Length: 311
Figure: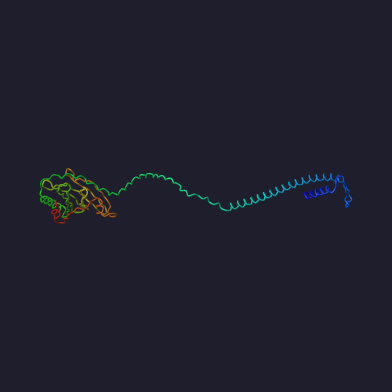
């Protein structure tokens, strides 16, 4: 608007200059006012200059305003662009935040695996071999005592030995009033058996005698051994004569042999109860003892065992 007013004033001033000379006076019949041309021209020029300055200022202001508007518009556009950019960045960030980040593509690079170090196996501990459990060993049987060398005997005839022993049995049977028991066993290992005789008129009075054959006849080695309730037995391990006593559940075993001098010798004995726990033969077996073959003579002579004995 200011620019437009300034242009109108300029046009008016130019019209006044063209209509009259300098110093002319004219009047305006409508307003009734007279105008001096010179004065008016000077005033007009002044106004024109003023208006020109105003116009210049106005143009400057307009340009300034235009620049300002341009700057404002530019600023607005910048702000709009900035806002748009901010919104776009915000949306982009939102999208970036919303969308899962794609996993980075990894190149399939085959890693060179180092060769595994060989495992060092610990040396196995040497376990001591278990000692075998000892097997139960049977109780060692008693070693037989060394037997004496067979005594040298003069040449004999088997029939002579049998006849000598028959004579002893006849006497003992008579002394025992028709009751005698006998057995044979080689106690000195010389090949000639010894004669064992148990005799007496009653059980409580029975006695045992031991005979051998020497110098062509029968010789008594032991007499007066208790014979009541006693039988003839032997130790088949030790090769010794055993006299086995037993009565009313009580038993005794007694061992005998012949020493280096040719005499009967007592060794050991043992007693036991055999009715409650073991029978008599069972207890004898525990001691490696067995009955000898024997012959009972009642009122008559029975020499069958003697005659059939092998030696």
